[in-house]
Length: 266
Image 1: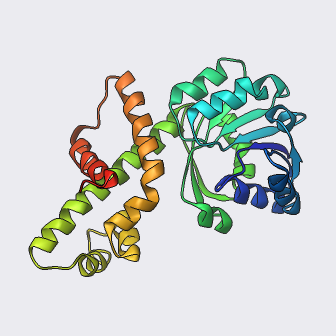
Image 2: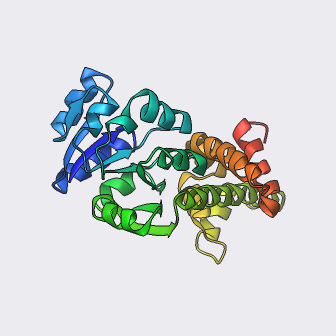
């Protein structure tokens, strides 16, 4: 496919590399000559604007950090106006479902495809994608996304991918908050944190929060590495859920406990 790509950073660049390796032609918006040289070395074609990335594309993938950047690129950067008829805009950015629905309201074919995993998962082709959108549009994007993602899960209509990702991260945050409480209880009982985490990772309480914390020797180690994206996504989730009259329910206290840890007060 002829692809455009905007947002070739920590997550985006390995995506571009995998797309090129899969045989796709990829035009990538870059901000600096150095970034352009690096991406050209990966086999992509660097261009100087989002609109140029969209020109003649069958699909454009967007992997910027925030909703505000999505709107800036799509409207201020001219991407929406430059999309060819019949092309698809695939938004990897985790954000408010109302953003992708607003893009669709401009007559654009959109799928929201937030992800779970990191650059190492992209390199291994095992990134998880939560895809929301019309079935036909998701299926058209599946071969492209499969260059770096497995599984690609179609979870519902447009916006559903964002809801699943936000719920995923809310639950992950709550697990870290509960794990913090568990470690403190263990410490009071004389069980060192590292010992407890290693033991729990082999027990029925094992989860990704437990095993990843055990690998770092402390819950705070995982919280520090995941803190920036968790803060952002929890803020997005709070706004999106509040707009629907929904709250985090029994997840709320555990999430608040994690926020104390992230703030350095706990």
